[in-house]
Length: 105
Image 1 (cartoon, helix red, strand yellow):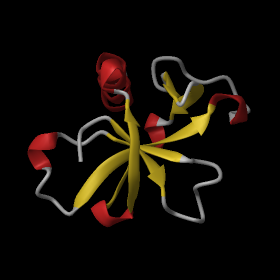
Image 2: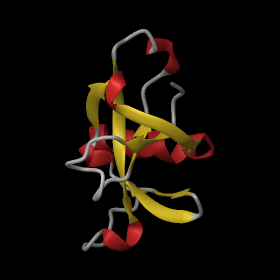
Image 3: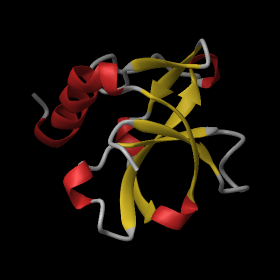
Image 4: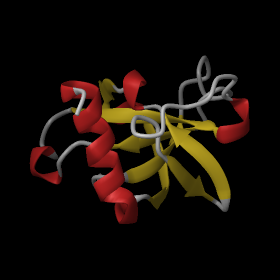
């Protein structure tokens, strides 16, 4: 599992709303049986205007998705679906959104 890899959501209860999960956990902690993930939602599906600094837009398969940083969660590694891509090139924005969530800055 690589940090910032995008995985299919295997959970049948949530995958229609959140088709992908982004693994944001450091690769240094790959020995843990859990990963910290952030769900992605289709940009058009969000009814309210997103908080720009908190929910960056990323692309998966050429489609825009919002990274729902306020909904980050820890899940078992076995619950991650197959990797379909990466958003590693957006690292700075993702870390800034996490920092904004925690510190408000």
